[in-house]
Image (cartoon, rainbow, N blue to C red):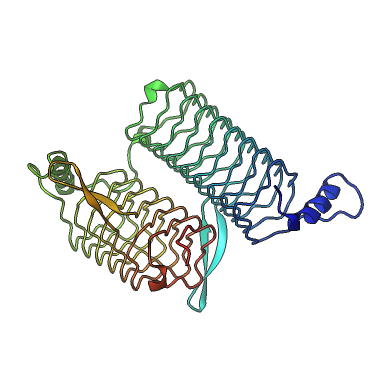
Amino acid sequence: MVPVDLVPALAAHRLILEGRPNGQRLSMRGVTLTGTDLERQRLSLAMLAGADLSHARLARSFLDGADLFGANLTGADLTEATMIGADLRGATLAKARLRGTNLERADLRPGQLVVWLSTRQVSRSQSAVLAGADLSRAKLVEADLSLADLTGANLRGANFHNTMLFAANLNGADLSGANFGRARLKGALLNNCRIEGADFRGADLRQAKLRNTDLSAALLDGAQISDESSRDRREPLSAVLKELLTLHREWIATNGAAGARLDQSKAALHGTSLAGFDLSGACFSEADLTLADLADAKLCLAQFDGARLGRAQLTGADLSGANLAGAVLDLAHMAGAKLGPMALLTPEGRPAGRDWPVDLRGASLRGADLRGADLRGVRLEGTTFEGANLAGADLRGADVRQANFTDASLTGVLRDHG
């Protein structure tokens, strides 16, 4: 049921939509509407920029042309809603339900936000986040999702015909049966995707990354695929590092019986791309990983204590149980990252009955993007999140009193009461 205090505003907005007198356009910029029931409501052209609509019920609602710039829609139910031409720049829709939703011509480009860091303003570009969202059968014809985060999203049967997906991150997404005809996917990340029956006819896939994605299972007539589509445009890994990664992979596969643990303590890895690698248990203590790409990497129980990870790409990375004590992660991209506890196992591989939490004590995450991140039970003594975006993050079990959240965005954050 719609909250009583919203009824007059919604009624006045309907008058505007119907062209009748005495109407007033709905304006709820920055308002907290977490979990609000707005099913089947007529919200077209509503001004909802920066509103917290996390876990709101908006199924079958009308949001055509609505201003949702920077809004938080984490976990919202937008099943079969109509959002044609909506402004969703920089919006967070992590784990939202968008089954059958009409997003034709919607604007999901990055939004330019201004945040405060101490006494100075910093302008930050914030991409739209749809990580883990259910977009099955959704319509996104001619929408603009440039640089959007769609990691792990369910896109089965969705229609992206003639859609702009420049440099979008679709790593680990399910694209089965989706229509990407004439879509512009130049520079997009499509690693580890399921694409059985996907239609890429006439699509632009130049410079796209397609590691562990089988293109033979898709329709590709007329698609543009350059030779570098499956290669990383960053500097190639050195022969020495490649060998060390091979030994680390063997170390993991044999539970330490063979191979060797990767140890890059104090190493200079500025800008290095290790995206998608399994680096569980590796040691990067005091290493320089500034601007490094670790997106979707598996970093469980890895050691990053004292490491420099400023502006690093950690979107969708699994850092369960990792040690990040004293690390510098200022302006790091960590939307949808997993920093929850790691369930420990016995040498025989059976549950040991206890968890190992992530250690962020003394770490700096100023201005970091942690939207939708899993931070359950994390150790936060002396941690600073000044100016960070934690919209929709899960902080349950963490002692938030020990951390600095000055000027941080905490809309839709899940945390313990009391």
